[in-house]
Image (cartoon, rainbow, N blue to C red; front, side, top):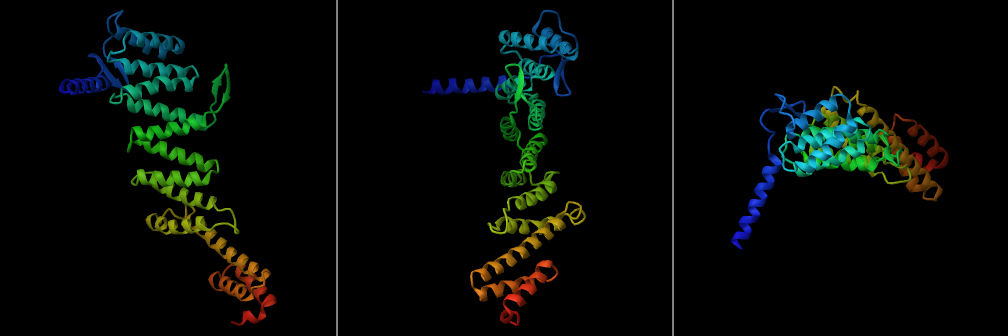
Length: 319
């Protein structure tokens, strides 16, 4: 049993070492990629990687993809393996195959989670997800006919899980929530903005997320005959925003949102008064007419309520 445990520990250590191994001597990290400081000798694995870097700069994307696949088969444990996977993905992007680029990128992220190329790879995946959400279509049988938006949302979720608290993670969370908002999927937008604010309470995007969450809550409101919970939730969330950002609340339409909620609540009570009148419940109808007049005195709803109350229920108007 002891030998089995020791063997397992050795395997874990070996795996971690493989995941965290640095680039060979003579290479340095520049702009999110390893590049040779001095040109390596010809015929070596390092020289082949350097050649891929040159080819990619020259736009020879198809050559790089082929070279990277061949190199990976022969040098599976080489320290530059993450770099080759990154080059392969970048070459796929260059030749217009963003979806295909995800395969080497995911290989890098899954098998080399401690590599210094993880963050640059996540940035690339974020850009691909963003392109998918903007309408980029996946190739199928040589034609661009499939828009993989569900894949994009899953990709943004994985970015957040892989680099919690990072800048790219924040952007991924906000991008998903904004997508739901822009598509009119307001309940999903509310959930996503709420999750974003929970994960990144001190983000530079907090103000935007809070305002958008209120607007999305209003977007879930289906009408005066339906549940008013969305309006109640929006009303509760506005005061803290106006207090925290007094100089920007007007700019971000917080006051306009608050006024809209105010108007809808008055309209709701007016409709309730009319409903009770039609149902023959005069006392209840009079109560809601008076409620509109008292609570929304500066609105057209109050004027309408006063006219209808006097015309329909004159005995209730004097209470």
